Image 1 (cartoon, rainbow, N blue to C red):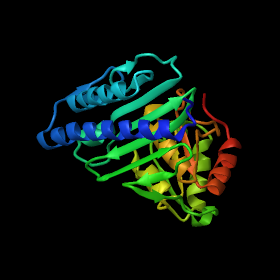
Image 2: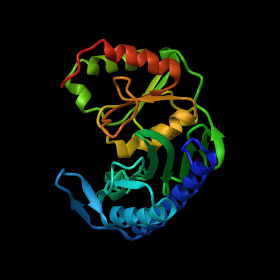
Image 3: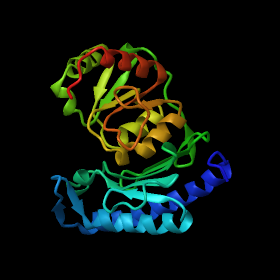
Image 4: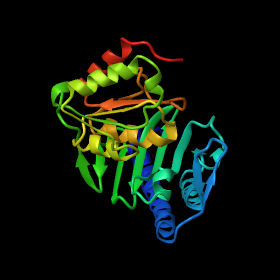
Length: 266
């Protein structure tokens, strides 16, 4: 077996989608009943929904692909040196979940030798699921999707997420100029603006403060929809990724050029 074998990827995709559905069952239950919130050492919230959802995901993925390691948001990484590594955020957007807004999701990705090759993004309360495997296109609830053809900043719709770090250096002014030059600016955040990007409703997404578990699956989806997905310095996603620049090829290239010309805080 090689990872380029489509049969292997399709089987892994089935397992990831089943795991996402199992997490959705847990999440919907606690969405209806409510949960207590615990604040972790990094001042981020966690709930029993996060933990039970990850356990459900881990059980399914381990049975389906025992040779793969798993790196999860709540229970850490069991074997990061394996060629195959699942990346799992069972409830990305816990703050939204506890504040009763539907902008949260389950993110499941598969990495092979450091390359992201599969992604499932399930938003059970928002009401949509996207998935993709390398070389197979991107899909929204079974229908293939593509990014928009937008190439000029003046016609572009931009969306920003977490950008706090950008406020400390020259990229903040570069972002401001990009916004002034664009057609419209929104801040959909979390999974939502990546879903919109992949199906052609947004043209460029910018974030400076993320974790790879937040965006690994979304990177595969956006790429397979025809987009470009890197960090703000143009690097491919990796376990160390902390920022995102994702968009149509022309807009990504223009934004990358603008950000490269300014001083970045270290």
